[in-house]
Length: 435
Image 1 (tube, rainbow, N blue to C red):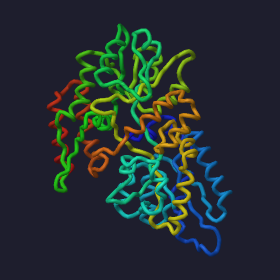
Image 2 (cartoon, rainbow, N blue to C red):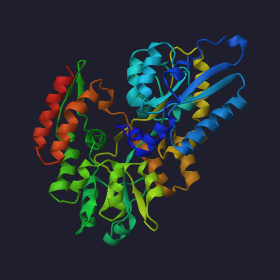
Image 3 (cartoon, rainbow, N blue to C red):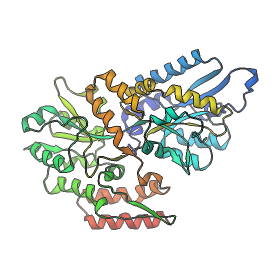
Image 4 (cartoon, rainbow, N blue to C red):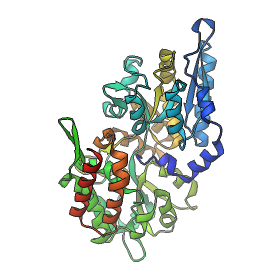
């Protein structure tokens, strides 16, 4: 998720293009927080910049705002449509100009920059204990910077395995329960059972490998980034080597993973998956949407829970809602957030985006509403293993990822360098970036 899969999908780009021009800088400038409102002259007026883009999610967002406005005449919220492709630069301009929206939809990995510059309000004292208690501390930590909670995490994206049910049955591979995923050893052994002439057991889409590896490294307590005495450095130990080594072994030792998938994104593997060329595809929990919408008639698929090492932990990069520090109506904005993200509403928003709600009760309601079908039971259960990862707190991570980690991992997975050489390149890159 941390590669912002929301932005990578073709359908998102199409949606963004369709919305282009709806939220230009002028529109954001008009979002001038409630700072100009005179509370005595009428209702508090809030601008809510939303990045919802899928049809069902868009409708849910707009309906919730309309319902709030009908029930709260003294606090009126204006829905403003944004898009993921341009929101960062637009927000930066708006914050610097003092004309930011009151409420901002974004993601934990991206709000740290704005938080550290003082553009986002600390929500710690504005939200009720009951509301805060619905979300695990590890998830809150993803939106906490310098001790300040500057975003409400509400939608998560876990990494699961989508599998061809008929091929599993034919190979005698049982589907694990939603709360009991395979170990990495079991996953690799099952990939071997599913490999046959003309078919690979698994297709790892590794066009953008860094976040995938950083994410899954938590399975073995792999941190990559270590901070001592205020200084952060990259270290590569056995824990950090586990995931790259296992994927590499599947590619070149057991030959249970397709080498052609190395240059693919998650959605690129679907034609081969539907054609039976791959029995399993590890990927985002949101891939279930493509299964429902694109799978051929009669194609049976199942969602396998996250694979486990010493744990099933994965990095969480939730979508967030924040309140602008310059907003004159922070308390009212917080009231709206608690309404907008109550369990029933959060469940509806998650369903619209095929993602995982952060709230415990929202998860329960989502499973109940869907009957746990189409992998919703697995999606909901995966929330408990999502937490903040060290790389998410490192300011230089984007540069390290782009200049050093991604090229090095691509070389390693292409079998052009050794695991030790990979480690050396990652450490040396850290020395260049984290000076």
